[in-house]
Each structure stands twice: as C-alpha cells, then as structure tokens.
Picture (cartoon, rainbow, N blue to C red):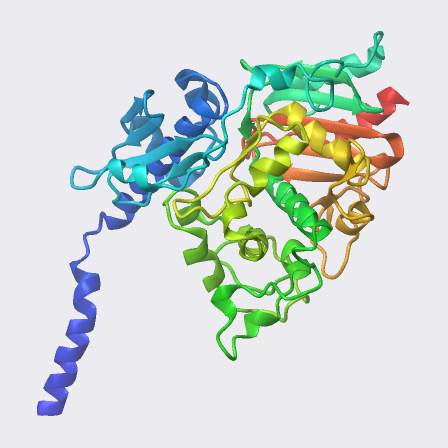
Length: 459
C-alpha cells in the first residue's frame, strides 16, 4: 500500500508543473514573439533601411506570420531615436522586448526578459562608420557613377519592368526591379517609397550571401567544403554529427531533423535566443548527404563553422568588410545578442547591392582584378549534387537552380527569399535580374515568368 501511495504522489508531482501553468502561457509567449518581431523590424527598417515608421508598419509589419499577425499592430512601441533603440511592451510583469541598432551590425534583439539597459553590453564594431555619400560618388560598380547603360533602352524591356512594378503580369507587390546587362543597368524601377539606397530585409537571399562568404573563406584557405564542419558543440566523443561536412550543410543535406518544414526558427528570429545555443542541438534523422530538407539551421551551422575558424578579432567585422570590398555599402548582416550572425535570413540590402553580388558571380569571383572567390566557385554552387527538392527548382550550394523552368536559359541560378526577394544570374546572357517585394502567401511573384520575359525582351 505504501509503495502504491508513493507512486501516486510521485506521478502527481510530475503533473503539478504542467497543471499549474496558466492556459494563457502559450498566448503570452506568442505576444513576446510578436513584440520581438515588431521591435526588430522597426529598428532595422528605420536605421538600416532609412524608412519612416509608417512605411515600416505598412510594408514590413503586414503580410507576416499568422502566429503573430493579430498581435503585432496593437503592441505599444517606443522609439528612442537618440540611442537608436526600439522597445515594445507585451506584458505588465516583463520588460519590453528591445532591439538595438549598432553601426555596421544593424539591429539585435535582446532575449525575452532582458532589460533595455543591457543593450550597452552588446558587441560592437569600432570602425564601422563610413561616409556613404562619398562612397556613392565612386565609379560603378564600387559606387553609383556610370551605373546605367547608355540610352535608348529596349522598349519591350521597359514594358516588362513596368508590368513587374504594377503587379499586372507577374503578381506580388513589387518594391524594386533592376536588370543588369553587360555590367550596366538597363532597367531600374522603384515603388512604395523606395529608391536605389533603400534597404530591405533579404530573408533567405541571405543564405546565398552566406555561401558567398564561405566561398571567400575557401579562397583565403580558412575553410574547405569537403571537410567536417567540426563545430565545437559536436566534438564530444561519439557524436555522429561530427561527420557532417560543410558541403552537406550548404546543400541542405545535413540529415539533421528540424521542427517545421523550412525550419522557421521562431525563437531565434523573434525570441532573442542565440544561434550557438539553438542551432547545434538538433539530432540526426538521416545519414548526412542522403536527404534534402530545406532548413535555416543548416545555413546557420555552416556559417558557425566558418566563424569558428576565423581569428576571434576578425569574426565580427568579416561580413561587413567583404561587402564593402564589393561596393555593397548598404548591406548589413545582423547578429544575435551574443554576436553570432543570423545569415539564414537577417541581412538588409538594396537592389543595387544585390546586382553587385550578381556581377561578382558573372565574373566567376573576380572583382576589380582581384579574385575573391575560388576559381570555379560559380560552377560549384550551381552544381546539383546529391538529394534534390521536388518542385520547379533544383538546389545547388546555397543557390537555387532554374534549369527546370521552360524558356529560361538552363544555366540560370538564383537566390530566393521570403516575401518575393530574388536575385537571378544568367551567365550565358551576361545578365543579372533583381526583384524586391512585399508579397503575401496568397499573392506571389512569378520569378520564372519574369526571367523568361526579360530574356525575351533583350533578345
């Protein structure tokens, strides 16, 4: 009888914490995520993007995740322009969610429960300020002088670009269209309060930027794609994840499990958790290299592998330094509060800066006479190797492949991002196409049709 009574008490003790939780706790957590999202996007939109609060609320804070969409508009936001900080309240008993801007690093979201004053302890870059106006006056592609090709431009291309902007032919809600041919801009359109220097979040176009940074690391001899990622978190004897290579990570073939399709990482993107705490913890589900699963974590882990190999003094400034070597002066890679880059999604950039990245690939990694990516890196990232996704597009190494798209040159490859961010590169036509937008899940831009129309217009 005593054993039975003790068992009942033991089981009751296990159940007590769950039973004691308020039914509203999941709702409160979603409010915390919504507050973090709002703080982050207001902060980044204001001081990375150079936009107004009304513009950010109209564009960046609409058409968002269903989980937080209803809560975001009602949460009170306080903008401190002097310190470049945004605070959004979500509960009377908790500090507001805080996002803090830093020069060269953009905005960082503090963890849930962190007081706003703790932003003073965030890592910062000491030499990130730059005279952007002076940099803009440099000759293209380092600056904006001489960026545009001589007139006249093909009339059909003008019509196609206009159709993309008004949404009539290709769908979605377009904010920028740019077409680069033979190294010069032959079409450029902006809408919704944007111009050539307006930055938007790249979403998953950042994954292709991450792949480019890894390529630069390969060129410098810092990292190899055919070697194990060798993350500190996986070095315990017997950890099977130690066999995962950098190549498998950047091809979405790690074999790791994840909680959702696409591996949304809500607690990282909106909750203020740290990359190093979250991303390495997922267990294997398939042998590495045997299974394709698109996952934010794979890109985050590949980036961690690169950063762990860099000298510690170089890590925080590595992406910014590389971008500025390309004239990408308004491209900012953001970090978590521990200084880990969130290069699966959290980069802000302009249409012209993405065109510069495309030009680097057209030139097979050579920029202004200097090789920044290994010879043949373009062929490497566009080679379908191992498991492939179903659907309209294949996958290389951080870039999507458009060789299944009818009427599109088969060597076309692209960086794709949520809400309609696209960078399409067509080496055989010396062509780069950039499209930025604020699409919803119900109204998406047809990038294959647009690419086909641009190619036809130029032909």
